[in-house]
Every structure is written in structure tokens, then in C-alpha cells.
Length: 224
Image 1 (cartoon, rainbow, N blue to C red):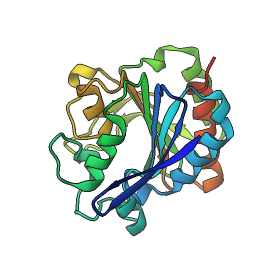
Image 2: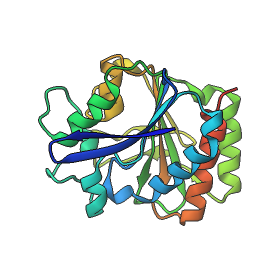
Image 3: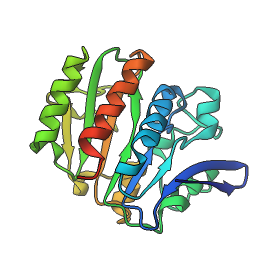
Image 4: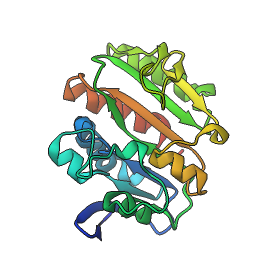
């Protein structure tokens, strides 16, 4: 695994690569108030590096937001609503430039929902993992950790969200995915074939966050 740094204006974004032809893109740290999951993902990447397909891993998508522990970055933007071509925001363009010349089979972007203490849910863009045995096993493992799975809306007060979940799962087809998240941009531009967006309970203790992320890697990301 090589460590590189993308420098653009006042922005420096460290990232890691494995192999010459990455098929997996991993993100964390898009929102600064979701910093707990960053260390969980770092641990899992280091632990499973040899078993993962070739990848690019960006641990901290928005360094300025994470440094401030805020949802918005130094430009006052929620980056998860702001990934569009033509942006002059350095954190946006730096992240786009890291990925835009590749064709990934899958992107996984780890988030936390600060509202929840023990509720997990997963957005699935164009992958249909909810139809497979891995998802059934993962759900059972999540519940064995004492977590529950979201049933109902993710956020009825946010017009960009308000997706309805059933047992922690919601499928989104690429045709209906037009927002400003990085994965939506990547789908539109053919950079990724699909995406998984796990939402870890933000109020969960760190040890359990680590376990949830570890389980996610084992069930969905390791090579067969």
C-alpha cells in the first residue's frame, strides 16, 4: 500500500493505493462530525489489505471539516451535497482528480448518523446486495452486537434524503441517483459501477464502531 498526497491550492489530501488497476474506492471523513468511523476504516484497511482487491483509499475526504469537527468544510459547504464538475472548491476538485481517471467496480463511502446510538442502515446504489446471503448474515451479526436496523425514513426533514428503509436497507438505481454526493457524481460519470454507503450509528462506542466496520469489510469487500 503506497501513501500519496493530492495537493491542490490550500488543500492536501493523503490517500493510499494498492496495485496498478484499482477496482475498489474507499472513502471516509466526508463530514467532519463523523470522524469516529475514520479510525475504524483505517484499522480494517490495514488488517485486510492483502485480502482486498486493488484499491484507492481516501481516509479523510474533507480535511478542513474533520479538523473543525463540523459537517461543513472551510468553504461552508456540505461536501456530500457539492460534488459537481466545474467546482472551484479545492477539496472537491482534489477528490475528483484522485478518482476520475479510473473505472472502479465498487465504491464504499463510510458515514455516521449522529442521531442514532444503535441503529445501522445501508444505501445500495446499483449493487443489489440485499438479495444475497452476505446481507442476511451481516444483519444477523449486527443484531448480535446489540444494534438494530432502520425501518422507515432516514431523514424526513431533508429534501435530498427521505429514503424509506426496510430492515436497514434501501436500494437506489443509478437512473434515479442525481444528487451531489461523491458516489452520485461517480455514477453519472462512469467512474464507478455501483456504491455501498453504510451509516454507522454516531453515538455508538468506538469499540463497536470498529466491529461494525470490520464485519462490513469481511462480508462485502474481501476477495472470494
